[in-house]
Amino acid sequence: MCAKKLLHDTSHITYQSLLDGNEQFIADALADDPQFFDKLANGQTPPILWIGCADSRVPANQITNTAPGEIFVHRNIANMVVHSDMNMLSVLDYAVNVLKVRHVIVTGHYGCGGVIAAMSNHEFGLIDNWLRHIKDVYRLHSAELEAIVDQQARTNRLVELNVVENVYNLCKTTIVQNAWKNGQELAVHGWVYSLATGKINDMKVSTSDNANLGDVFKFE
Image (cartoon, rainbow, N blue to C red):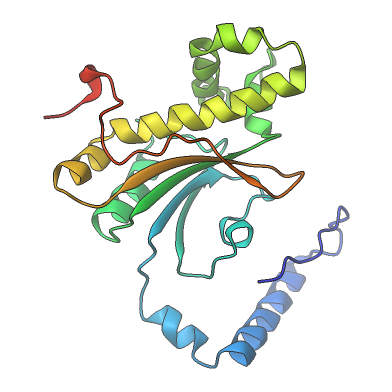
């Protein structure tokens, strides 16, 4: 799967160019595999749920070199797992209990605009209510973060810590814990993607049980 040339000038992208691009996509897909769309129409059995940032520069399939049907994707600002977010919880429930995914990956990225905004004291509007969850991550790790003098390094570390905390948030859900209790094969992971290099940084927080959760978060 080849990466398309990235252009800073997006003025060539129009409503019509998207439709034209769709026609080209169909032609290319059928030329490569005449049964491509027949296979897609038969259903999906992706082994992965990706919870990522809505940033347009972090496309799940492209940066992992996977094909349509191989990753089930949920994206929001700064790849958050919020316990009251019914959108995310609905995706998680469907992925775990219906699709039976085997891995859930929280994927952040360095240079995340949501994280940068959360680190500031500016008021942005409605999104401030969402960014507050990132500010809470900062509060939990303020001693470590404020010991980092370089602002970019501090931001990068908050991006990493935000992924780690949201992996923990995933593990706290009844959806994930019930899957484990029922013996379902399910692992949760945390990654950070570098826009500058294309490299994925595994945060080494993978888990397939609730052993690392505080007792108060564990369900019997």
